[in-house]
Length: 186
Image (cartoon, rainbow, N blue to C red):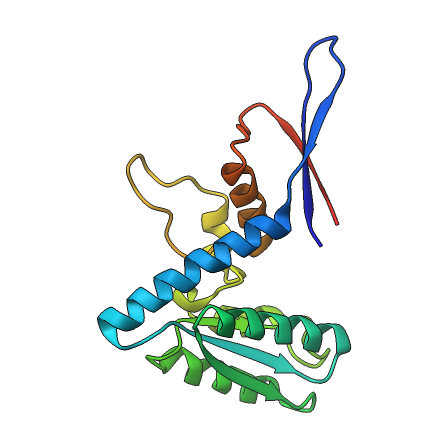
């Protein structure tokens, strides 16, 4: 459960804080996504596809991927599951990623970390197409997180979930963040 706590410091004044109801905002966002997916399906006959790649049987990773798949399905996404044995080689995993990159019905790829120790995570993540890297871990997307779009331009690529989620929570609650200090708990 994620709570973002924002604080405003004023010179010689006590600190004020507010708690943001992340669960309520998340539910509203999921509802908005479901409506958009339904409209997309009506207009095009297709829906977004999310591919999840899980290597091995780590309990926390399995739970996280299961939750993401369940939420994506509830929003109307097409689910592509790639649960692979921990013994898979790095090259075999890169081949799975390449296959998902090439599929037209896959709009996003989530490679669950950590990967087994015999696999170079960075190398695998570099093979995920930046246009399908929903975690924002590809070096191109990570770099875009640190840059500002030009005036009038939309941000390109995916942004890492946690910072983007925090900004979305603040935007939806009307918190002006310029000049503020923030603490993320949870």
